[in-house]
Amino acid sequence: MLRPHSEVREFGGTVGTLNYSALLDQAPDPESATLRFERLLQDDTLRRHVEKMSADDLPVFIHLVSISHFLFRFLSRHPDAAALLSNDPIPDINTLAEITNTHALRLYKYQELLKITWMDLCGRHDYRQVLFHLSQLADNVITRCLQLVSVRDTYPTHGNTLIPFCVFAMGKLGARELNYSSDVDLVFVCADDVHEDDHAYQEGVTEQIRKFNQAMEESTEDGFLYRIDLKLRPWGRSGSLVLSVDQTEHYYEASTESWERFAWLRARIVAGEAALGEDLLARLQPFIYLRTLGSDDLQRFLDIKQQMARQRQRQGSWNVKLGEGGIRDMEFFIQMLQTVNARTRPELKTTNTLDALQELVQGGFVSSEDGHTIHDSYLFLRRLENRLQMMDEQQTHQLPDQYKQRMKIASSMGFGSSREACTMEEFNRTLDQHRKIALSCFERILPSS
Image (cartoon, rainbow, N blue to C red; front, side, top):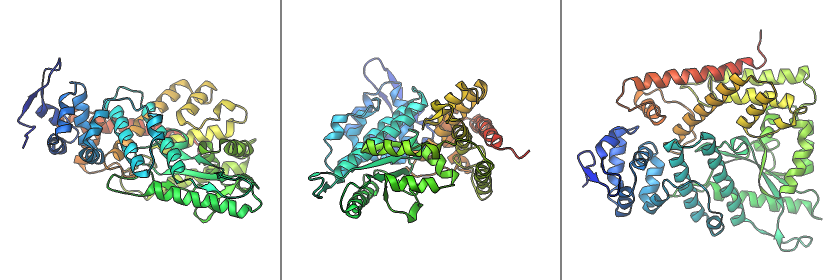
């Protein structure tokens, strides 16, 4: 059996001699890195790929297998996927079109996720590109999965055509800021009165949605596609899986829920009949963006802020998404300013958080200095969130209190070697600085004094 800690292997070309032991010791989790690296090199295919890696790429590979258990398992099962490492995560549309079943689609997802993780860990790209590629991957998987499970319309008025409906991405997917392991928030909308038997038509769309959800969430030894969350639809979990454009519009005409307005700030057409979605978005503009800001609206916003504050009192470990000084603080601040100003500043009508922040700076709603610090803090916390989820593909946002686990995260974020005593101090100090910036956003929302 190969012993990486004691072996020095020679690589060809200009790379020279690389010491596995030194690189493994610098990994976020040296013990896991050593065991996993040793196991992977027992496979001839993976060994050949590793031996061809450059002096720049090999540390990234060791970092990847050290920090991500689920991608280590994927490489163990599919060693040929190592050929994708260091490739830019630009999806091959032809490859996607050739996929004929959900098993192949799952393999495609994890191959692309492997490339994106490499892009993330090598640190050579603007982090917004990582979030964009994670979102683009989900877009592609959703679209292809819908095509694979689609059924043909047998109604006389449509003949042998696909049943028309539109899919909206909400939340972080709508903003093109998806996490590594996040529920995909979707809302489905169908057409108005396209059949003599409108009920049968809506049932047909509903059946497609059920098949789609089942295919997306099916878990096998190769993983799963995405968890689907439909609770943002009208009436939430108690509502129909799909409503027509008219029905959806009527629901929001009567809604007074500010959180629903915030949800639709990020709504983006992701699949299906785009014309249906564009029609609905045009109708919902008065609901999403306030004409005037009345006392009732202010109270609803204040209620959301107070609810967020109460939720924090029940938490244990600090939550990078919902905790005090977390991601949600900055998002809420930006969405508040969008909601009340976009009617007169149409450039604020964007689903992306940082694009909206940039427009707020250009419009004079946020100072240039504040915009810069909020931008940097937001991306730091998003990187941290993704490091937490990169490990086991779990939807977690809790920063571990246990020293060894936190040290692993800190090292993965670039705060020195896990053997350096200053690593944790530097990480905690930097995290506190970014949390203070996020918290200052939260405290600026309808201050009580």
